[in-house]
Image 1 (tube, rainbow, N blue to C red):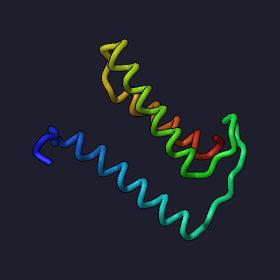
Image 2 (cartoon, rainbow, N blue to C red; image 1 turned 90 degrees about the horizontal axis):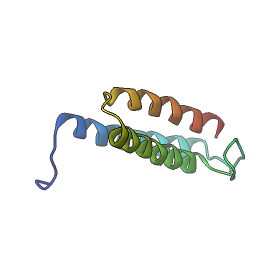
Image 3 (tube, rainbow, N blue to C red; image 1 turned 180 degrees about the vertical axis):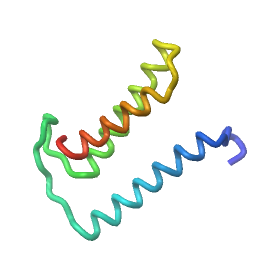
Image 4 (cartoon, rainbow, N blue to C red; image 1 turned 45 degrees about the vertical axis):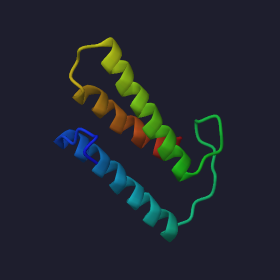
Length: 90
């Protein structure tokens, strides 16, 4: 694991992703979900919506990094809200 620059933000990021995946696994075991159609153009499960939310949040961060010099706390806040919206109504 020495190839990666393990700074505190990187460690927190991967820890949070691992925690979210563990929570979603426990939630799925205790309460299996069925596909549903929200505002996304496809029928999705909770895991699908989590993946779509995380992927779109990554793209949002890349856009902020590439186009602005703003602090990365801004896209983080937007990403958390976006992920909550996707999980709830997507």
